Amino acid sequence: MKKIFQLVISLTIISAVCAAVLATVNSITKAQIASIREQAALNAAKLVMPPVKTLDKVKGENGEPDSFIGKNAAGKVVAYAVVGSDPKGYGGAIVLMVGLTPEKKIISYKKLEAYETPGLGMNLVLEDFTKQFKGMDASKELKVKKDGGEVEAITSATITTRAVCRAINAARIRMEKLQAAK
Image (cartoon, rainbow, N blue to C red; front, side, top):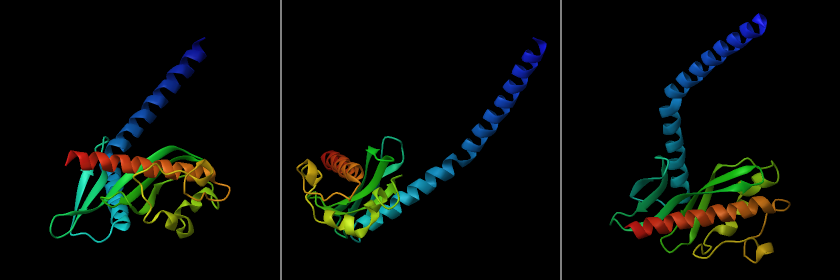
């Protein structure tokens, strides 16, 4: 009984030390990670929008910028870059930065996060797939052709394609909320 008690005490001390080290590392790196995420979102926003004079950041529910409003020299909104996500990709969540016009036409999108199958689902980043979205009307729900929509699915990756459509739909909804708030 004494040996078991000693083992429990030893494991408890080791666990407490590990937890303290992890908490310390987290507190040290938290701000840097947030800064890197913000910069990645800003870079993606610039890629999915036409050149703009000013780019206003809009913070999301988590406190990090998840939307950007692009304005021309006259201050008129010319584009939105909005994060859209869907948790039901084949390999997990798909997070996209989606460029949209104020008229809800898709400009482009860039992957922020996706863990899809290489050579299949990860083809969501290839121009052969992404170009079909350019100019598409996002005011109506995007769907895969198999589901009665107009989006051509990636061969052998229909789940991924559906998740991309839902992520773009989520981005449009977020953009509509931004438009309503103005």
